Length: 391
Image 1 (tube, rainbow, N blue to C red):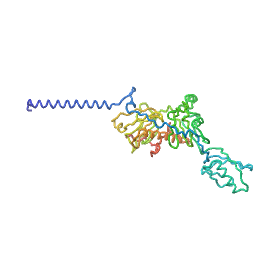
Image 2: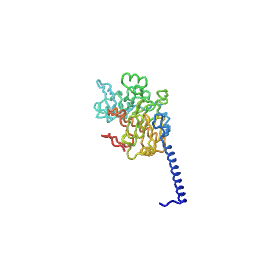
Image 3: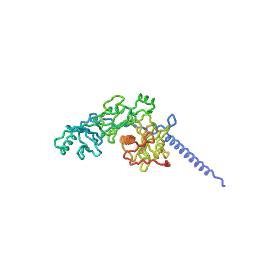
């Protein structure tokens, strides 16, 4: 090997020096980048939600329609299932109790079938007398009395004293309906029931709700029940759904574009990725960059938006969840945070209503909360024979 000249040695030293400084610069950049991407951890060593993704408080609605606080002036109209007592005046042994059929008709005496669906009591009485006059010589005198209401109900379910379906024969306020159901499971009643071995849950007023025609009404149950604020005491309408969830439920609700939307048992240290995996992963069409975590009350929730795609790639830290959090995987990107939160809350309460209604008709539940079906999502719930492999 030929010895190097002085000039060649000098050039080699310069090249080595440049390589050294280049390596030192890249190392410093890498260290700074790692420090920037490093997840924040809480005192327990779990990823901290408040550092991982900023929770933004949103107010979905804060106004009660004044019309909801006044009773309806419409007279009661007859519907299928109602029980009517018909008394043919002047005739003995002609007092009859008849149930309105599913077709809205009653079958009385010689009448082939009289349609009374949607009629008031006075209108139905007049129609009965008119039709009976076709079959008798003298003008009939008929007394019509409503003996049972089966066509108009309100649903009060969840952790109340006596959950069930209650008839709505006259104007009824929310407090009256809750009182009929025995009131929400409070601390005192909880202790009594728990002592008898009949209950192990309290009602969560923060997440209690009234659902009307698929829409969440802005009723604040904490203000109504705990503070006696009658500005929240609305009048109920037929088919209103009132629900009191469990305050101590250890569950996380996974909704939206996942294979099986449902409530998964909460485990210490559960993250968004673990919750989505418990729902058997996302489906085609899921918008993974706008996965949301919703926490807190239904009227004033907090929401954090997570780039789930970067999380599963290891490019961002995962997020620690709390019991009763809602994890929502959207089908499309959102533009306005308040509307996005409203969509998630509406999906949640609609899903709870579906499961609550299913429990009334004897549909068995294999878990404490059943299967949650996002309204309008088009997702079909098909329990797998065995869990599919996670991608």
